Image 1 (cartoon, rainbow, N blue to C red):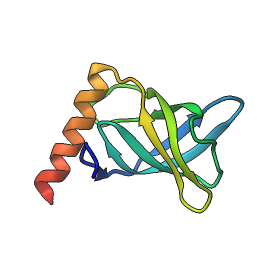
Image 2 (image 1 turned 135 degrees about the horizontal axis):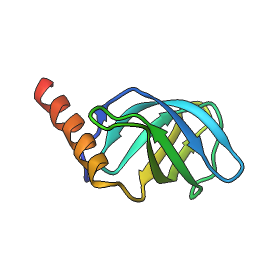
Image 3 (image 1 turned 180 degrees about the horizontal axis):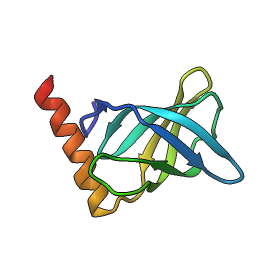
Image 4 (image 1 turned 90 degrees about the vertical axis):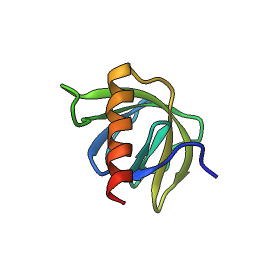
Amino acid sequence: MRAQPRVEFEVDVQLDGDGVQLTGRTADLSPGGAFVVIDQLLPIGERVDLSMRLPGVRGVCRIPSIVRWSRVDRGVGLQFESLRPIEVWAINRIVRSAARSA
């Protein structure tokens, strides 16, 4: 069972890692991480920066993350390593809003 609620949330993203730069799209989001649809396998444990826009936050958020799972036919599961307070606020707002409309 997940410790944190995960909600559907789609936004274009960029992943920057060790010599890799990929574009994709989130499928879901939680305060602890995100599922990103990409068509390339990334090694589990690889550190990447997830760049995306969040509602209510000016500019692009660049979130240090770690690959927790990767499937070539689906995408990658990312765990956020650190979030700025404004990003925590924005993600919690997205999760609460989705819970109210469910």
